[in-house]
Image (cartoon, rainbow, N blue to C red; front, side):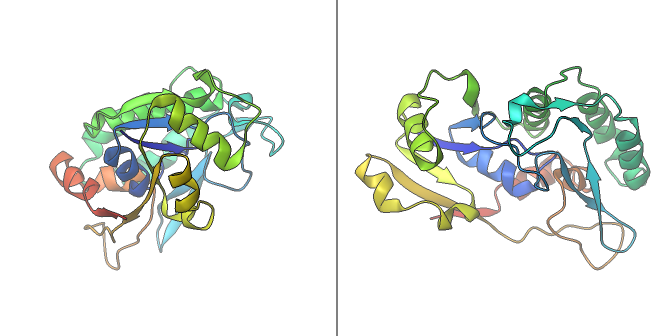
Length: 229
């Protein structure tokens, strides 16, 4: 069984969903520390000249707290309106925007729960059927951290292969995983390009951008644009 574990991010780039698509089971890593200035509650959409940062307002955000200890503000209307204005002329706006509105109107006031719902809803739209887990709900040794916590989670769920994002190459050692009876792989997304409003193409934006400019069949092809080694 192939497993991936990732912190929940706000409308992450397509490589995040390629990772979910590439594995049999996925764990939302909600019981690790919040990263201020990271991608847990912010991302990029298309801007007038290049890209534009957007942020989900939170309560009590701190690097000393776990993701599931932080709240989400109900002041999200400005974010909804920003997305509407950015993509109202995009080809898939009428199909996708109601989904985004539904996500941003979700009632869960906990950041981890809010982001978990968001990821599940986008996976449903993309027809990704990977089995789902939330880390804090697993009966594991919570005194563990780092790679030891990852390996323990793999063993708990019966994984034989662990697939990680490209950034994990500097953190994880294949020989260490082998000694624990696990095969370690890394996903490498290919360069994804599609027609936006105008040239040049702006890469590595939020999944919002992908959804607004690509229908479901095009999204399916983009989800397959990766290698695993």
